[in-house]
Image (cartoon, rainbow, N blue to C red; front, side):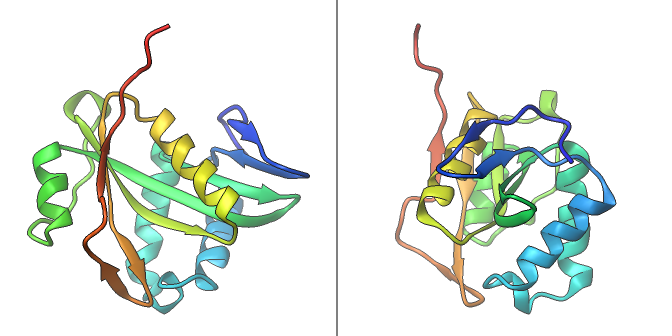
Length: 158
């Protein structure tokens, strides 16, 4: 299912993995998101290409409990300027190649468990070291404002 090494184990049988660009992974993500707010209210034609692109680029992490998905994080690479404008609803994100980008935007995130939420966010940050990471908090088809919506990942000195 994954072409990335496991990025960490949580309690019990929950693992965080990067998903490979397969039909199985695509179906698992869509099935999980269909039951998650706010994604369950999205048109399939709006969310499916986003998930497909995240899987193809390897810009994703999933929390799996056995064969059941309990969390998903997906992002795309962009510029800081575009990420800032996206947070302010003044720009549409377009994916960039790694060497042409300096930021990442966490565009799809859903989790059933707080420990999983923290591990997915930490994993996404670890995979995007040196990039500013942008995110919006959306609940019930609304975006919450007033909370921190960007972080800069820095590598700790050894």
